[in-house]
Length: 369
Image (cartoon, rainbow, N blue to C red):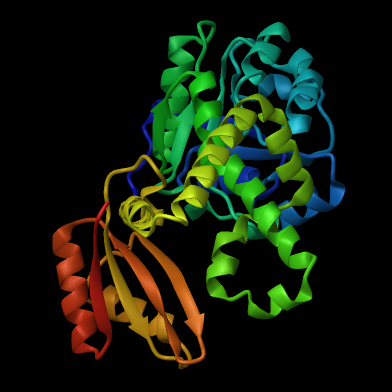
């Protein structure tokens, strides 16, 4: 993980996180744990959320609404749900100093920059950390959620270069990897890799809901494939609706692929070729890569169905000084399951494999990337 101390130029005396949920809370914790802010203020319409965030030590001060106090903010992170972002910015804009650095974490970028430009917020850099969990709320916030995550920044022709540079440095100091691209490109990409899978998960879960026999047979593979359907329904709805133009285009391409696979049912060799292509693509996308980060090297470790097996594996590697960059439970069955471990270098993977094999675990490599 990136434990380097931040440069003084990206220290913020007063930082405001507007929307203290999973991502906003994780940003606040990252600011605190990495010494990036002297005082962290949480702004949220929910008094219960603010009390919880303060009790957990996520923020230093609670504010239920915008006001003159915002004039002293050095940094504002807009972390409200998608449909609330623009109204929240409109509420805050009259009180912000012209020098306040503002960014957001919304999952759709097409309109937010223009909306803040119209509000007179000049030091604004649109952003989207590609991180999250099906478990929402500040209770599940953690600074490590942002580490090694791709954090897309989508400046426009109105974005000051100095503001972009500062937000990019902030993202790096939080342990994430900044990637800069136009807003339209971002929205098209996330429509395919994030929003389309959500709709596909909904479709599959609806099929199961309408036939209880299917639910009896839905095992680990089905649960893995439909995991994103467990996210917050309202936030997920807002996400896909905001990006509906790009999402409709992605849905069209998805239908084309499904129709092709349907035709291939009558041609086993073509279907086998499609299966090989799918396997190659899936195997080249370990979770730790977060789609755009440097390649990792994976090990798959078979574990018996006994208590504390994850702890035993991580302890053995930790005592040997091997840093696990990512860990994923791949399967849970009556006779055991398996873990995917993401290592940074081939040497780390080789060392980890030798240690675990010595401990009696069955280990196989799953290729770099």
